[in-house]
Image 1: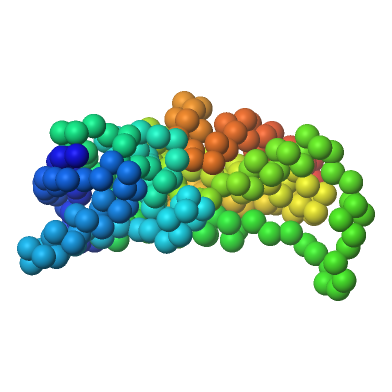
Image 2: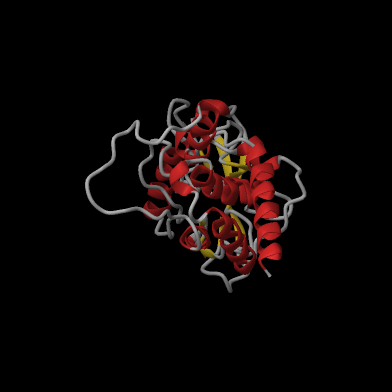
Length: 250
């Protein structure tokens, strides 16, 4: 395959950035997208140019570090992580445009790499439960309705890649936050902090500079782990209940 890459170059959050272009020939259609980027960097290095910086870690579709906007789509044309995307998804002669996640809350570190530590701070604001130390309880000691267990498991599948933010026209992180709130809030173990968790994590989300949710559904349509869009409704329900309880306590 012969492809033309137009990739984003930026030396940091204060740098205006620009696109550069390069054509690759003899690209193996069975190569993964990141393997193709490795080939690009080998050519750049051989030519005495600086390689393109991009995130990757497991390359197994587990960690979500490999986020790149490809031709306007987070992670590319397939609903998967960038590392699990293969060049057979493109055609010979294609032009591929590569950009980093675009969000005020995700400042660019370099080229295609962004700082997603805002997600970590949202989790730190409430993504925990109270537990008694000691021997582990029997698995059947706390009964969980199957519907709640299944929905909690779906929410817990979120890998925090940020594709939902990159796809949202408002740069909202509501799908991510709802997943992190509800996978605990749907279980008995998550009940002690349930009311405070939703308020604190949403407050941190706003503080990080993410946009507001207008329910376009773009977030769920690109999520590589297929996090249900309905989780946002569950989060809003918990928020309303929490605000009602706090108002009555005054």
